[in-house]
Length: 162
Image 1: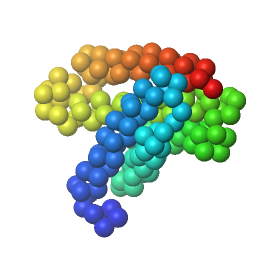
Image 2: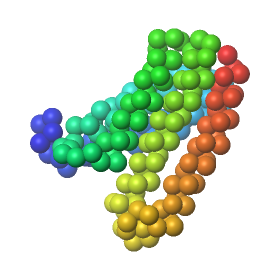
Image 3: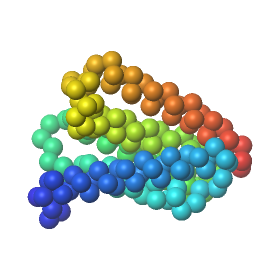
């Protein structure tokens, strides 16, 4: 039991929060591409990304795992993202620091989505049962390339909109 829920129920909650974080993160990224000031969707993205990281740490863990490492990296990215937006109000360099770390946190969410998809979705699992096969590598590579390219443009446009 985790927080009074079965592990299955808690996993569904964690997954739902993660999916909300990804969708709102992609919408927030579109806003950055437009040079828009962060709106409510950005706040939802940051909150749900932080919540998915926090809930990830609540799973029973007895050894260091890639999931734990991902949670630590996500935390390290979210600290300057939150600081840039909420403490420094995107002033000066904090604008690009916020954009860069928020987009990197979004990529981590997408990275985990690809991993989990190949582990849990039957047809994908058949293509890459060990998570090291070409289909998995292509999917991860595509997610990385797309988010780096769009993220680069997002940071540039968002920073110039100041």
